[in-house]
Image (cartoon, rainbow, N blue to C red):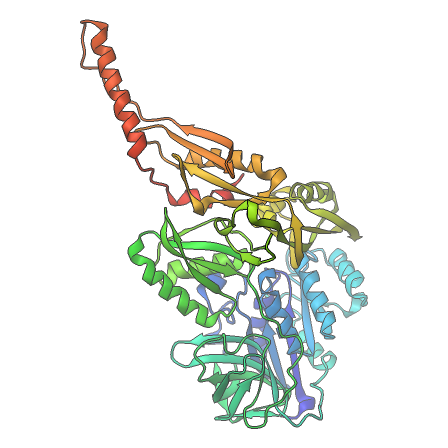
Length: 592
């Protein structure tokens, strides 16, 4: 195919604004998929994606239309996968910006627009869902005009569900998206914008070729990881794999390799030929680091090996997934896993439970902390239980984020109060039409548990939130430990700011009182910072009336029986074990 006839573009939008539905219509109109084989969200392969109505894994597809080769990438819309989105944008020359005509511009829309502008893409604005009764074309159109600086007439008005106006999207993609640039480089370079592991075929790469060509059976090499491999098969996705002889410069396609794990071929890496390698990688590669951690434990220790095997299999496909074995006196053997965010954690948990039939206990999510010891040694800890003795610590740094919240103007006060309550710093407030954009900085740990839920309830569901990691800052942090019947439970320990420690301790202790069942002896629930207890609740014992069989006689008989019962309870308190249910370990997620 001539380069002048190739168009590479992607779809960017907030969650649930109709990306995947628009992709369905485009595939239908171009005849890439026959109508009888058509189903909703055809590019979303996972059951989870269909159920949640979100795109988790991006999906490229090649379409033929009026003599042009159109390569489309359907990108994820969630903040957890923003690095994947940025790599997808680098693989394209244009972007279809889809905005819901009833909801307007949201936080993720802004984030993706900034990424597209940074990648210097031709942006085609599209108003979707114009057939809905709640659609407000004038207002939302004005928001797009103020965001992009385009004219109102440039905005395409469509309904991806009914197909109205979708043909115009293809025409605009051909006319507005520039063809791939012709470069003078003689060496081969291709950008990996996604990779996954197939049980039967090995690691499969989704690539955009920038220079040269990659033929079938060519020996290839990854520049960042240095891993060598063989291109066992190359071709295009329509949307199923259609093998070809080679992938030429400017084209988007797939490469089936003989690699055994995606850690050898990470997203953002550059593929080159082994025999004539390029020394200059394509820009923008970075090692994606997780910054949300949680302990995963099987319900019974006999399933530990099954859990470990399942996570190892999932990590073959997901290079961002990092895990280490963990041992807890209460929960037994488990695995501590690092995630890109809470949605990523949620997806992995559901996949482990569904695909591998595992019953899991998941501890409260936390972030990583950088600890400087008095002797100059630096530690990176992912769990409060790993914190060294306070006397050895010089300072502790925690991650802070830069966030943006888009809300209708009447909710601005409540949102600013919410940010302040999370130790956040409000930075800027700007208005567009009837919406406000609130910019702020806040510690990541305070946003992990219930921030999103609180935002949705304060803004009646209209608020949307986007963030990116900023830096690590020295804060006055302490570790709060929790004791159940005098025994410390490490899996419940949390790191928090000194000013928030006492309210948090009281809050969690009272929540634990609700979920831990009563015993035959009194159970003390305590929160402590070091050796100082800051909160306590008691779970009262079950009481058996041992005097029911007595009738009449001297009162000393009654006292004797009660004294015997008290002695038994005292002994039970010394030796008795409290069975802690799984809900106790996720009590922070249900803080309110």
